[in-house]
Image 1 (cartoon, one colour):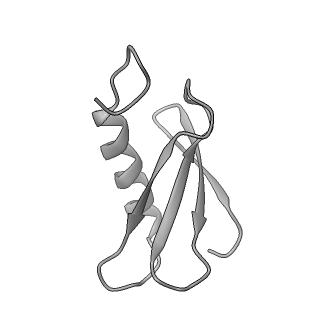
Image 2: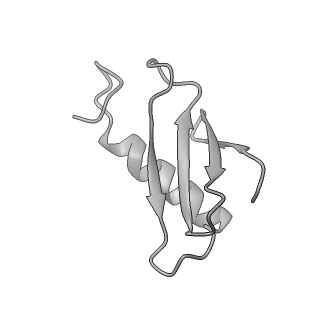
Length: 74
């Protein structure tokens, strides 16, 4: 993945960017969330790109930690 891609998970939309250094590091921006620009980063242990399944699992894990009242991780 060289260009950012949009990934929708459980009704929530994220833009996912792979960092260009080939480190397996991805930045996720929560486009449909209540806080503009908010998101998270994730990195694979071996430097390989995330699979589509990995992207979805990372997003679900993030969403499970978000406080619905604030839109931020508790």
